[in-house]
Amino acid sequence: MVNGKLLELRRVMKARKPNFRIQNSNDPRKRFAGRWKRPKGLQSKMRERRKGNPRYIEPGYGSPREVRGTTAEGFFPVVVRSLGDIAGVKEGAGIVISAAVGMRKKAVLIGAAAGRKLRLLNVNAEEFAKKTAGLISLRKKRRSELMQKRKVKGETKKPAAATAAAAKPSAAAADVQGNGKDIEAKLSDEDRKKAEKVEKDKILTKAK
Image 1 (spheres, rainbow, N blue to C red):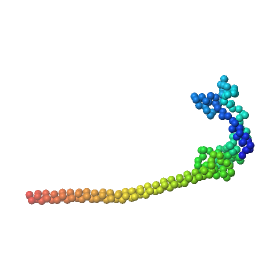
Image 2: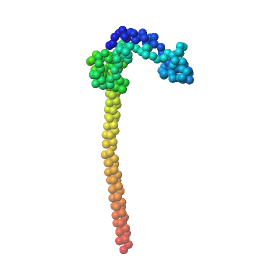
Image 3: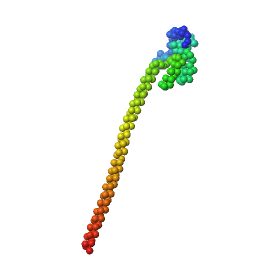
Image 4: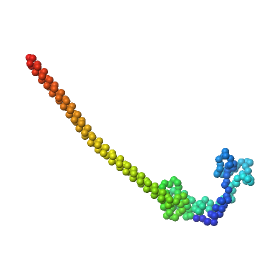
């Protein structure tokens, strides 16, 4: 933390500080509102600091050097992405967890910051804990539902496989039966031919 008097002085100075605008920012053809650019025109009245023109940026509008860049509470923000970054944070600085950090790693960084009693500037630890608890429970529920669906699908596939296996022997038996009928048909044809030959032999012998 820094001096509270300097923070109050900065607050008063910022309340009186004008909104610096680019030259001719009110021109609808030029979308420059909310942006600053130094005027360079040869006949620019703003560059010459003439009255009735937008204010020109000058050093006197700056905040006190001791509190420059701090938050409203007086903490110097430090962006952290790992436990090593937290270990290097000095006392009196506030932690800003990078947006590129995932949920699990963010929880670890929050715990490490709480262990060192450092101030978190962009994360509310209690709200984050509630949110993560809800997400974790929701993920567990979805995972259990998915496992249940997979289990049901596996049970439905097993009876189908069993019926297919049971159907295979019947098909084989049908093939055996079919082969048996063919054999019987072949045998009956041979017997019929033999009987016809015997009848022909009898007729020939009688004719002699």
